[in-house]
Structures are given as C-alpha cells and as structure tokens.
Image (cartoon, rainbow, N blue to C red; front, side):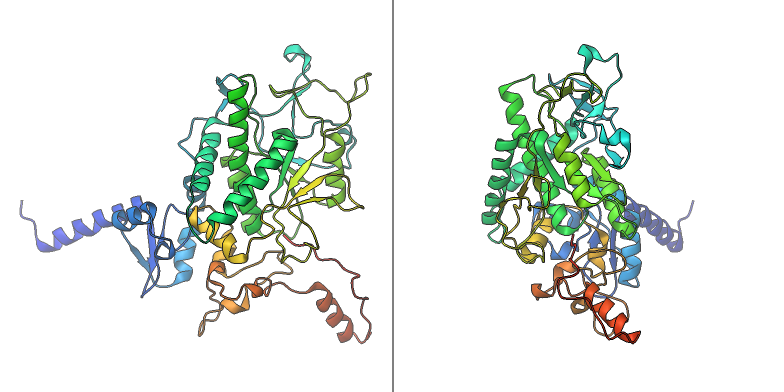
Length: 439
C-alpha cells in the first residue's frame, strides 16, 4: 500500500485533534495568553512558575480560536470537570469515613433548602443534622453526616500546602489567617462553626480556608479519640430570585464535590430569620455524630450551643464598620460570634490566593466582573474594558486600581433618586434610608 503525502498529512491532523481533545488545552489567536484545562480557568502564562504550569506547558497541545469569547465558551463547557480536578483527590466511590475509620455509603444530601416559616422547620433541632428513622440504633433522632474520605484528604493536602507556603506576597497574612480560624475551631468545635458561602470571591476564599482548617482540626481530634466522627463542613446560603446562574453553577458543583453540608434558606427568609433559626436550634451532636434530642419529646431540650459564623468581610467592604477579626453580632441580630479571618486582606491578595492555589471561582470574574451583587445591580468593571473592543473585558485579577473593585456595582439609592427626578417628583429618600447588602 502506497502512502501519499496528502494521506500522511491527513493522518497527522486527525491524531493531533484527538490529542487536543484528550489534553483539553485552549487558546486564542493572535498573541494571546493560553487557557489550560483542567485548572481554575486562569491563563497559564500568568500563573507563577511551578511544577503545575510547567507540566501543562510541556504536555498540552494548543487549539487556536479566533477570539477570546469563543475560547471562554469552550472553557465554560468544561467547567464541571475543571472544578472536580481543581479541588478533589481521586474519587472513592462515595465512601464516607466513619468514627472508626471504616466506610459506608453516604445517604445524606449535601444541599437542603430550609423554609423557616413552615411549622415542621420551626420545630426542628440541630438543623445541620440529618433525621433518622424511629427504629435507628440507640434511639438516635438525627446524625451529622460524615465527611467523605477523599474530600477530607484533599482538604488536608490543601492545608499542608497553605502551611508550607513561602510566597512573599501572601504567606505572612495566610499564616495569620489560618491561626485565627484554628483558634475559632478550638473554642467552638466543628459542630458549631458555620461558613457563609454565596459564591463571591471573598466567600470562595473563606470556603477553602475553612475546609482546610476543618480537616486539620478534626483529624487531630480523631487521633486523640478514635470514636470521634469527622463531620462535613457546614455552610449557609440565602436564595433570591435575582442570582446569577453562574453563581448557582459554582455552588452546585463545589458543594457536592467537596462534600459539605449546605443549608440554603428559601427565598423570602431574611438574614435575621435564618440566623435566628440556626442560633436557637444549635444543639450539637455527640462525638460520634448522633443527636438524641427530639422536638416532640416531653423532656425539655438543653440550651443551644454558641455558634460562630466565618464570614468573608474585608475592611474595605461597606458593611465592615469597626469590626475586628472576632466580633459579636449586632444588637438587632441573634447572639453569635462573627469571625472575619480575611478582614485585612486586600483585593490583590484575594486573587493571588485563588490563583496560587488553583481554586475554582465564578466564571463571571473572567468576564470583567470585580464585585458581584445580583443581575439587577452588577455590571463588568469599566476599568477593565478593553480598548477598541465593544463588549470585551480583562479578567478581574488584572485590575490595577483596587479602589475600583466596586465600580461595576449600580448604586441603588442614586438609581432610585434619578428615577424619582425623571418622574418629576424632585424628592429622594433621606441619606441612610437604604442599606447596602454586599456579597
């Protein structure tokens, strides 16, 4: 059989396309920074030189697109696999580690929606625990969900990488932040620490810091007492109708892959109502994860355990006020401790952390959004608009003037004042009449 040059070239191109599909490397032309998958969707040439980036530059084939927009479309199509690759150790088939290091299928859902206005929800105790049937062993009413072995190990690995970090821009404040969270866990314990996870960049930082410290703290507790069960990390979210679909996509993927317990308060539940619901019902289970308290029992329930909420508040946020790293809740809220471990972080350090540890974040940040509210009050940051391009923006981490972080947020008060003036009223609400709810 005679092979013609045309046949050889065709065979080479076919093999090349198959290789590209296998390694999934994407870039655009001309003179652009490449996107490599699977990563946290960060241009590889912008990443610090590391074993990770060198490996992908050497091993990946490049598929060229005509525009950044087309490249981003391909990146988003592969985002589920990207999140899994960025945050997880090898899958263990859904096996969860119990108190004695054994295993069993994990039947407890990761995401539960709570409507505090329903009577059955108002009568619940230990909201993060999962109800057990009446015939459960020893008469337990509920149980905390054990954390899967792979998710716990991945978090331990992340904790070790953070602890050993020597990057001069982030290492000092990172070590201080880990210490602050560890002290919170030492005082409150894993059953009484709750993270706020709404998908914004600051909340993503908190989410991964929390899971790393949670894994380390609980592993040390289990070494001291092999009867201790390592529970899932606990996070909350408040649903609302104007949420970005990209935020919901990130939440869905990471909550399941990292195997956390998410309580999502149904739309219409206020922040105060949701937090009061948790604070008044936080009866922590025993070390093996079992809770024996039933709301319909004749015996009185014990007083709830104190709760601490880990938040992504930074000092430049509008609602930061005079808070410190540890701050009691405001007088109009139920009593709990606010833990603000990244209070002193800058915008640049947030992005440096996410990219250095290759952590997944909402895809909107790659489209020029720098601060996320909702679909009605958030636009890409004008400072990131590309010159000569109609609807193209640089990624959020390329913002040079960090004071412009919220430049894409629409001022609700000014917008309403403007609408009132246009209607001929000439009136506006007094200063301070409307608050600012930020992610």
